[in-house]
Length: 378
Ligand code: GLA
Image (cartoon, rainbow, N blue to C red):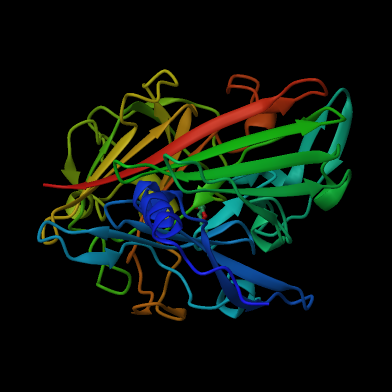
C-alpha cells in the first residue's frame, strides 16, 4: 500500500513543531565511551544549552569529562582536565579523581575509622595511614545508571547508584542520585540526594580540575581566586585536620579579596609546606546560601570567570600539587599545579571532630545538597 502523501497541512504542522521546540529540549546526546574494567559498556552524555556551552559526563564514576565555555572573544574551549575514553579514568595509575563523583566520604578519614552509636567502623586506608575519597573503590570507580531528565528549559542528566550496606566498610544501603542541569546562564548545577537504611556518614563532592585557559596550558598560578572564607582547617603531616578553625587573616590563606594564586603559594608557611601548596578545607562564610559566591576564579588571558555556589559548609581548595607530568590526558601531560579543584564539601574527617558540622545521615532523613559552577567572561 502506498504511504499517505505528505500533505501541505501535515508538512506545515511538523515544521511548526520543530520551530517551536527549543534546541535545548532535545534529548541528551549519548555515545559509547568504551568498556569499564568489568566489561560493562559505559556512555558519554552531552548536555548543550542554547548559547552553545557543552558539558560531557560519563556514567563511569559520575565523571565530568569536559566543560566547553566561551572566552572573552567567544571562542569555545574545554576548561577541565580529563581523558577521551574510559580507560584513562579506570587505569589503576589514575589516583587523581579527575572530574569524578567522590563518595561515600569525600576527603580524609583519619586511620580510616569513625564511630557511630558506639560501633567503630574501619574503611580502607588508601592514602598513607588514612582513608581518602571513599576508599580503594570509591564512587569514582562505580558504574552509575543514567537517565535523561531534560526539560523544556534545560538539558539534565540523572545518575543513580545504590551503594550496598557494608561497601568499603560503610554502613547502610545508600541510595544516591545526582542530577546535573545545564542552565541558560552557563551554569552547571549539581544536585545530590541520598537516603540510607542504617545510620551512616556521607560527604559527596565533585573533583573537577579546572584550568580556565584549557587543559595542558601550563600552571594555574596566574589565575586569581576569591574564597568567601574567614577561616580554614589547618592539617597535620598526613593532611588530617587538627580540629582547629584558624583565621585566614595575615596568612597566605586569605583569599577574601581576589588574589593571584601564585602570589603566596611558595611562602615559608608550615601549612603550605604540608600541602605542597594549597590543599586545604576553607570554612565558608556564605551560610549555605546559593546566591552568594563561595569562590570566584578569573583567568587573565582568556577572560574566563568561574563562580562556585554551594549550600555546603566547606570547600577544599587544591592546586594539583600531586600532578607531576606523568599523566597524559586531553591537552597533554598534566604538570605540577596545572589545575585547581574547588571541592564543595563537609569538613574532612568530620566524624572524628565533634566540633565540625555533622555528616551523619539516618534512616528516614533525606540528604540533599547543591553546588553550582557558573561560567562567564570579563
Ligand atoms: C583532594 C585531596 C588531595 C589529593 C586530591 C587527589 O583534593 O585533598 O590531597 O588527594 O584530592 O589527588
